[in-house]
Amino acid sequence: MRIEIPAHVAFIINTLERAGFEAYAVGGCVRDTLLNRVPEDWDITTSAVPRQVKQLFKRTVDTGIQHGTVTVLLEKSGYEVTTYRLDGEYEDARHPKDVTFTASLTEDLKRRDFTINAMAYSPKTGIVDEFHGMEDLQAGIIRAVGIAKERFTEDALRILRAVRFSAQLGFAIENETAKAMKEMAGQLSMISKERIQAELNKLLCSAHPEYFRRAYELGITAVIMPEFDRIMETPQRNRYHNLSVGEHTLETLRHIRGDHLLRWAMLLHDFGKPQAMLQDQDGTIHFYGHAKISAELARRIIRDLKFDNATLDSVTKLVLYHDFPFPVSKTGVRKALNCLGEELFLLLLEVCEADSKGKNSYAQRTYLPKLSDIKNYYQEIIKAGECVSLKELAINGKDLVEAGMKPGKEMGACLQRCLEAVLECPEKNTKEQLLALAKADIKG
Image (tube, rainbow, N blue to C red):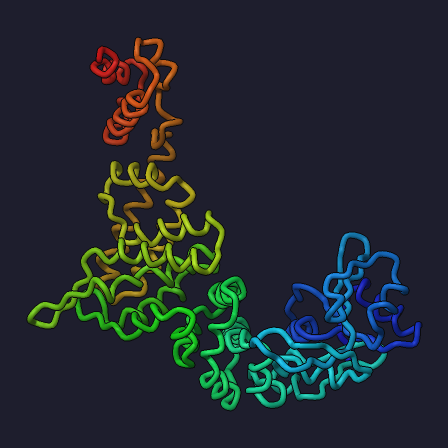
C-alpha cells in the first residue's frame, strides 16, 4: 500500500537508503495519513546511527543525540531522524537508564506506545505493520503494543495519552489496555506538570472533550485532578438541573468550541460547587457563592499545571463571571465590557451559552433569552460607540491638570468616578459634563 509523503521526507528516506541504510516514516504521521488527517510533523526512523546520519546531510542539529535523534534541516523545516533503538530499564516512569541502538526495525517498533502509532512506511517497502495497527485503526481501537503494563512502566504519561488519542480520534480503549491503565494510574504522580498539561490540553481541545469522563472512570483524575472526582460525585437537585455537577460539566464541554481558554473554563467553572453545597429540608440543593470558590480553584489548578499568565488570568475571570453577575441591561453590559474587555466579554458569552445548554429545558428557556438580550445590548453599544473604558473617556489626566487638579492618586480616582457615571449614562461622556462632574475634586 502506498501513501503520500512530503518531498522532504522522501528525500531523507531515499538518501539514507542509497547509502545502504533502512529508513521509514514512523508513528503518528503514518497513522494520521491513513486516517486522511494532516500530520503535525513527520518523524523518520533508520538503521543508521547519528554519526552516519550527520555525514549524509549538510545541515543537522543534535536535538537528542543521547537517544539517537538528529534533526535534519531542509530549507526552513526540520525532521527528526532517530536510530532504531532498544530502551533499557526504566527507573522513573519516564526515562530509560540506557539506550541501545539496534539494526532491527521490529525491535524499535516494539517499544512504541500503541499499535496505531507503531507502523512505519517507506516508498520502497510500503507499510510495515508488525502489531496490527491498521486493524485497530479500522476498528477504532486504542491498544498498547505488546504487554500494556510494560508500555506504561516505560512512560506513565502513556496512560493519559491513551485517553487523549481516544478523544481526538473517537476511538474506544481496548479492555486489557484499559485494565492496565486503571491499575497503574498512580504512576502519573511521577510525571511533570508540564507534560500532564500538554496532554490534558490536547484532550480538552479534541473533537470529544466529553471523553474526559474516561479519565475519571479509569482513576486518572483521582491522581492528577481530584477536584473532578468530587464534582462527578456531587448531585444537583434543583429546578435548573437534572444532571450531577460532573455530568453537567461534561455536557457543557460538548457545547463549546475547541478554544483552549473556553474548554478549560468549562471544565473548571463548577469546581467550587462541592464546597458551596447547601441542602434544604425538602432536598433542594443550592450552591451559593460557588463561582468565587471555583475561580480560586481554577487559578490554583491552572498555575499548578504551569500554564502561562495570560491563560491563568483569562480562565480565572471566565470562571468567576460564568453566571454573568451583571444586570441584564445596557448598563450591565457596559460594566461587563469595562470589567473584562471586549475580547474576554465575547468569550464569556460563549461560556454562558454552553453553561445554559448543559442545564435542563427549564433553565434553557430561562437563560437563553436573557443571553440573547445581552448580545443585542452589546451590538447596540458597539454600534453607538459608547464609552466602556478609561481610554474612551472624553477627558484624561491632562484635562484635569489644566482644570487645576494636582497629579496623584486622586486624579485616578476622579477619572474612575467619571467613568462610572458614563457607564451608567453614556450621554455624560462629554468634556464639559465630565469636568463639571469633577469640579468638586478639582477644588479639593
